[in-house]
Length: 159
Image (cartoon, rainbow, N blue to C red):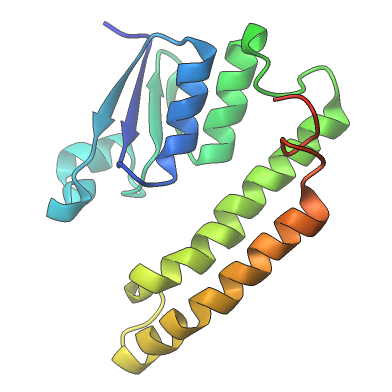
């Protein structure tokens, strides 16, 4: 039995946590949640993650959700993988700031294209949200490229 179980959806934000486990060399099993058939709303999956979202990481310590928390845990659990600047609190906080921006702003801006039903009920609202996605995503990526990236990696030369 693997040390960790990561619940994922192909092509989703769960890829970041999946990549972190892979880069760390962790003993894990990836379990795909079938969003097309609304498996995320099943009693079984809601017992793992009551939020009904991915990723969710099951460990011997318990269950973690939310990409920044999962990735910070993996980085700290496998320090030899050098997934985060664990010896520099300022850089670690900058990494967390970047990851939180991706989750709280970029992901939400993108979600307006496909999941407007989370925020509205009227088709006109969906249409308005979808029409704004190119502008909001462009603004997000301009900020990332112009202000947040320090080098080839988020924090500069190191992974």
